[in-house]
Image (cartoon, rainbow, N blue to C red; front, top):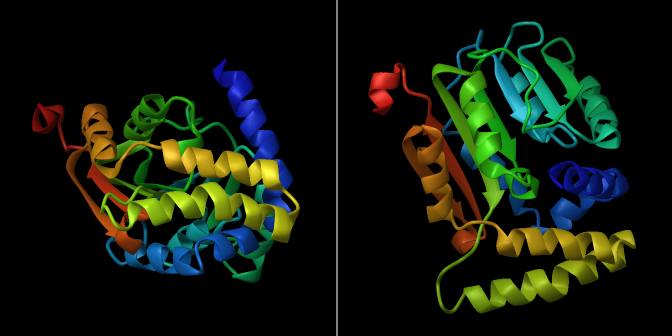
Length: 242
């Protein structure tokens, strides 16, 4: 069932890849760039660190991380959509970070990396599309080095009584209409707004991080809660987690 789900979602992202960046800007009214900048400001990297950017899409976050690192293949960008990765590769080349970036096709729930390989794992706007989120978080925990950090930037759900109805109207009515108007992809953006509406709350995501073993879990919300960045650290020892 999970494999069929992933195949369907992969096909969706293959389809929307050519319009992905433009639609992100339209749907978020350009604020997704601000969310990523604010999130990056809280990530402290050493030039020789190794990072993994999961569900990397067209590579914007991959590139932002690579610009802070110096080692060859310091950042691996992983995504299951070949068309997304082709767009990401062009961006990487244009940004002159091709030495630092290695783009790979793969499944975020079954990572093809050794245990304790990375100082940082990021996942931007991808966790909500994975059918088994605890499995994905367990894999992220496994490949992080002790003391390494997970950072997840994701759409979220406002909880203020005056804001939430407007948010629900925007995602249920306006986002699919934008998909039809600007990308001729109504069904695809109807699905994406559903994953946004039904994704766990920011508090539930904290609990998922903690259940996976992460400590020091905290978050920052954006646009009245329309998005949130969550941070968690893999303990230096298992005793720290216990």
